[in-house]
Amino acid sequence: MTTTATDSHATEHGLSTAGYVRIALILAAITGLEVSTYYVDFGWLFMPALMIMMVIKFVMVVSYFMHLKFDNKLFSWLFYTGLILAVGVYCAALATFKFFG
Image (tube, rainbow, N blue to C red; front, side, top):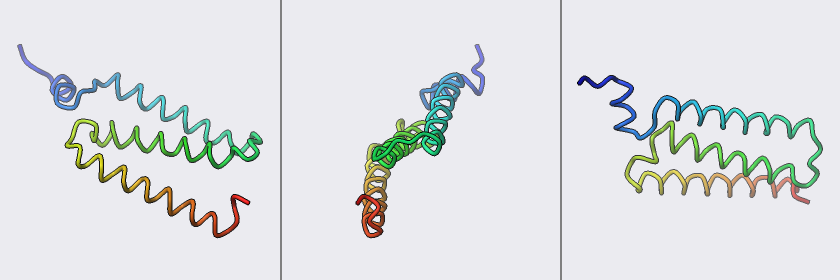
């Protein structure tokens, strides 16, 4: 019995091609929701909604497409620490422009 490249990839990284397609469709749906925030008045929920969707997309891309979910946990810690620092710096920058006021 021979293994194909797809079988070997799914065994090594844990997701089949269908799994990657599902993740891509979820990311496309979240992107559609992000774009819709421009056309729908969310009021004060505008920025928190965008930030939450941004974090969800970051985690999904890093976890699945960069295979971080299947790597050493140290790499996950480094990526998520960077995410927390980036969100903190972004919020601080917005606060200096009185965006939240």
